[in-house]
Image 1: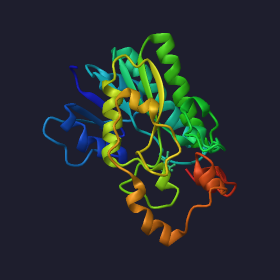
Image 2: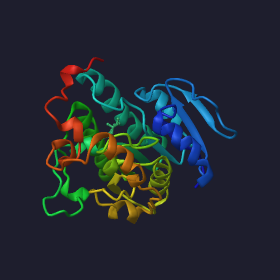
Image 3: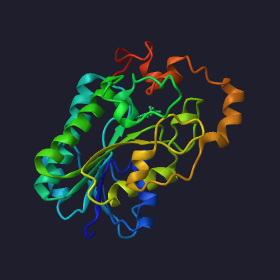
Length: 273
Ligand code: 15L
């Protein structure tokens, strides 16, 4: 595929992981953020722009082969902040793709789009199809809007849009919930590579999680795209369980997709812009 991949939010946590790993998989990158990305690599293009600025995004998208849209607030915040940053930038990413003729967009959705969904009582793995929109926060609402906008741009304009419902994408798991929900850095690269490479995916929504022993989100749909996980959070289990105790699966933190975000204590009123 010709043309670089435009990565928005490239200076952020996941952007930094992708900037490290995607070039090795053969992807040329055009990295966009509101701040300059540090340590620009040979061959990497850099743009300083706001992903919620449609004109800037359309210029940035010209000649790109795909857009990986990561920009936005990465957790709960106030409604105006979530609306103006997350929802607006998702619209701009998709509309810029349409205007610039970029055929594929990979969207960083989140488990919090379906955060109130419960762990299946029969112990089965939870498929995306059984986890419809059920946001746990305004942040989760912005991810539902992201998936809805993606669906619209597939049906109306014929784009390919892959929504990654990312779990806990950190260097390593730091809570016992993350023994289930961790997405390792290597697996983050593998998942985005698969979303960029899968032939004609149309519209897809897939969990983004490593093949963790304690995982309860089904990986079949992601694997159908070509995702191959190489990591398992279980190597961190002994230390985390010793520090925090065995997870109580009746606790909402472990029983619901969104974990802490779905608890009564976790309320938007506690967040400032
Ligand atoms: C997310 O979507 C957030 O970006 C991240 O900060 C974590 O809260 C993560 O989900 C998670 O559920 O662990």
